Length: 177
Image 1: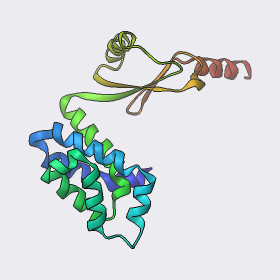
Image 2: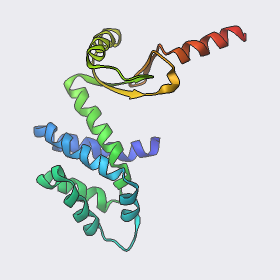
Image 3: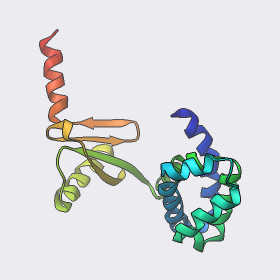
């Protein structure tokens, strides 16, 4: 969703600059806010004109321990709520994390697999992928049974697809030509 990314970018960049002295702490509370803001009930509550920004703020701070500890987090949340951007918080968090990773020289890599990957196999796969993509990677694994077998790796806009599903689709395309 390009529009949401456009809305989120200035918030993520401002947060990244403001939290430069303690990116780890900011990463904790922005992730917490991202998870909370993804809740449909909270979104509906925030959209309800019967509730004020202060009431929504108090509710979020009450259930978000990391956010409640930080004045910076509270100020950021207040700005987001006043501008009615609660729905943009997951994207803000994602862009903030990307900025943090880029500063550290890391890139997010999502590994889609038909089956769970144990830690030893993930470590070995991570080493191979870092060599293939020529960069340090933060790995996360998501299960996608439609792949049948193998893996599909997404790093930014690059995709490495060695799944059985992809190979079957290639065979189908070759046979139907």
